[in-house]
Image (cartoon, rainbow, N blue to C red; front, side, top):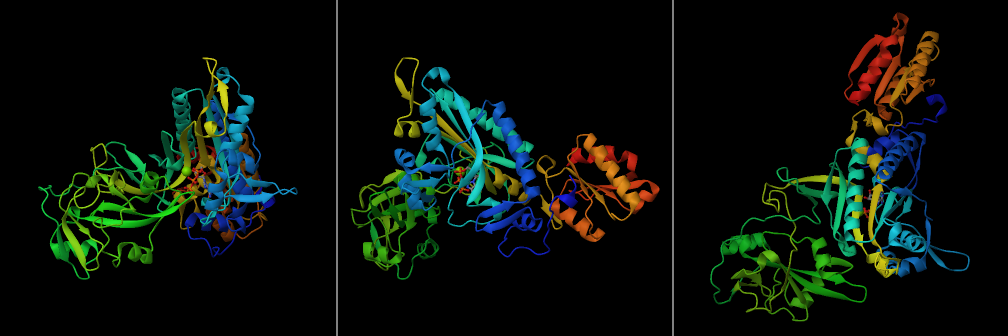
Length: 574
Ligand code: ATP
Ligand code: MG
């Protein structure tokens, strides 16, 4: 491919809304051009990268038995009502909806469980047809609250989504393991550094879920991992062994104590000369379910924090937010900072973290401005709460297997695999006839890869102050042959010859034959980030060209006849 014919348009300035290096560089390189918030045109170079990633995805999913299909982007409302998801997705604001000329409702697919379950129901009648794993690579639509970071959080983006259908749980376990293997090979081949982590299964439930995270400072997800044991989890899901609390003593009488203006855990520590682990803080939330909304109270050991994802799961609610000050004052009859379990309105559901189970003589608020209670005991001074694991694990705590400390990193979620079980097939009455002659719901798994997000993640990991440094496998071109001055015949002649030679050797090479100044050409090529560059410049008068490895800047001057071998050697390193 000749860059003079490829519509290469680079910018000198960063777009105003680009916060991350990867977004800035892709925009400046003309890889992506914004049409509207969260909507981008992929330029010719970006599209080459997308096709390389999709080729890798296709190969590896196919190698594990995946079968490619293509489903409609537009889905009828009835299908989403049959799974019970229409209202929830509309309420969350994530769904793009539209009407046809007859007034019927449709949405643009944010994911395809409903469509594929309906397809499976119509095409799979017997256990003899199972297992089946169907996938597609297609644009998805989500009206994200905050589209940002370029392709990392778009409103239209490219996803590979796969769905496995099995007759039983053992089959699902196998299908899931196969996708896990495929994902590891896909991200390894894409040249990104990643980690797979246990993920929250959320409201969907199910028996297993893993996310694949590209490790990057800019990642929106926090992950905790342990070098010693290999344990790794999204912080939303992570467990740990927390620091020990002081030993419990025999329950003694509760003591109400004046604590004027002492509200926070730190202030209480100083006031009572007690460690935070001997206290229970009480946090009030407003939880929302489909039919109702209620204030709930959560007790957590003073030195630990609440994980709101775990709390949402424990409550099985749709959403959760901290109660507003006014609501707290109204409920507790006290100013903010004095809420506690003692004397709390009995109608308020009270949950407590497992670390508080069996603890005696706690220091808590007592719903009276200016007072706290010492020696508070559950079941005696207030009705015993429901104990759940509601605690946020933190770096420094021990891994749940006790083998070593947890470390923290940030990640960009590029893939997600999920054991769904029969949630959709039961809701949508999608079944097959089993070996015993009876109908049974499909046991399903679902699997997603953010193809466009993966492309940008590679740039977030691979760049320097001059531009992008693509992993060779997904670079738009592996090699650029640059003719420094296209008016010089000898340079053109050598450049063209090397271009042909590299093509013949099976290298994915482009020829930079653009009529631009040498300085601008070099700057562009650094920005665009092809892994290896061959430069046909003044040296050609002595039969020489330069070969440069973009990642390190390593450069050799070699005879043109030997350039091909050097390119291959550099590509090995890229
Ligand atoms: P997130 O938590 O980042 O919003 P998600 O968990 O909702 O993502 P999934 O439903 O698991 O996303 O979708 C599968 C994959 O699609 C994700 O792992 C991610 O790589 C990609 N993806 C999801 N949302 C977007 C988006 N708005 N833009 C680009 N890629 C996305
Ligand atoms: Mg996900």
